[in-house]
Length: 306
Image (tube, rainbow, N blue to C red; front, side, top):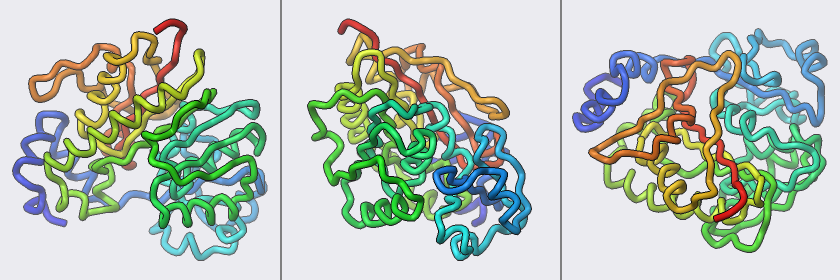
């Protein structure tokens, strides 16, 4: 993909957010593939002895590894079919690391398909506790079910429901990896930049606001939710979290960070709109920060009172 294929409005927009030359270079570079060892079936040490791959540790995930070389054909390996590992982008591992679910937790993965983060949650919970793995797309649900079965996950119930219609639960932990414009994934999905337009972003923001509000309403007092996207659009990220904070006085953003993970300052104002200053505690990960996909992650606690 050439620079000329970046739309003028996109270039102007992102030049106001980051060093566009570094961003462009990262977007046009082939990034290392990464995998996550599925500890429900094999230990990290046993896997590393068994697999014939050149692996380099992902600093922020003990089970994550970058694969040296082009990483093609990973899905055809016997170990993949056996569920010993999941092909997962390294920055995609961050939200569950931040959520840190425990074996005693009741967890909702609100937009779960195709299952990379659901299987990561289950592994952290050691197949204990309970997970509701929800999605609203039947075809994606088939992939979710196959991946959960392949990885040996059995502490879950899958549901096919519009996320905004979920009601009446009290979850200990909730992951909302929201549907988004995906502008952090241009290096692996070049069509993202071809399909990008501000109107599409605004439509997604409406969905994201519905989902984050519903998620928070289903979180128990004292519980934790993580909101994440692979978008770098402030309106989809800081703007959505700011909206939640405006809706609920008992929603509190927690300062987060992971060892070895580089991040950039969150956006506090965009398009003439000032966001709640608490969004400064969120993680904004640009592709050029770590040579990975871009990601946005917010950790939100539900305190007593309304």
